[in-house]
Length: 316
Image (cartoon, rainbow, N blue to C red; front, side, top):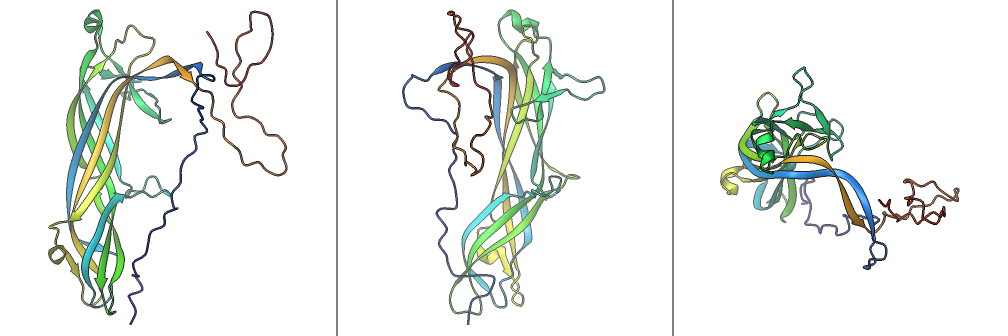
């Protein structure tokens, strides 16, 4: 007799299935190529980090594939949980989404006159930052920031994917391994799972600056799971006829959120030059255009028009 077609013998995992990244940046360890660069970036004025967690208990969750008639699980090797995401449909209600909803006390979000907050482009390339305003004169006179307070409601919707690596026996004489998997619904938009916490941030002056402070927030979510009582006998039920597996689970949702007050600034930084990547050259073209302009110093005092190397920066 052979093992069930949905299973197989124990196999070794591949060791070369991952990769390393190439930034194109190199440094020879000396200061010969170090130059001063001017960057227009966002400065973090104040930030707060929060860890939140929620629990979902799942009863009788069905897993695939079915193990066949007379199957019996003898050992659980591993239980994994990950976020569900459908790259073909960003609006799929099964996509696990964590969305922070924040209200502010002691300040207000600048609006467009129709009750909609003004948003600006953040480091993620989307309009993810809101502009803040409050009267900061009292604290400005003391050369300090103005405290603001907020309430955060983190709304979680979507599914998680649970996988169980198990050893089982069926109508074959030897032990076989199988990976059971299922989509577990956590919550839907009409009834989301909500986690709440409170925070305080320090806000800079709104008068001594050309730009109003911005409020940025972002969250990430992971999940962990185990059998409800850590017992195969109590938590896993297998149909003796079809081999369908059902399990009782506890799923922990682990959320990290960060709130930031950011302001635009210009920084002078030391740089070793610009990234240089080795392109895969096509066999027809002999030359290719560059992607970024050369950096040119201001005219030398001697009146020369010599072009400097691309690693040179603008000097003030």
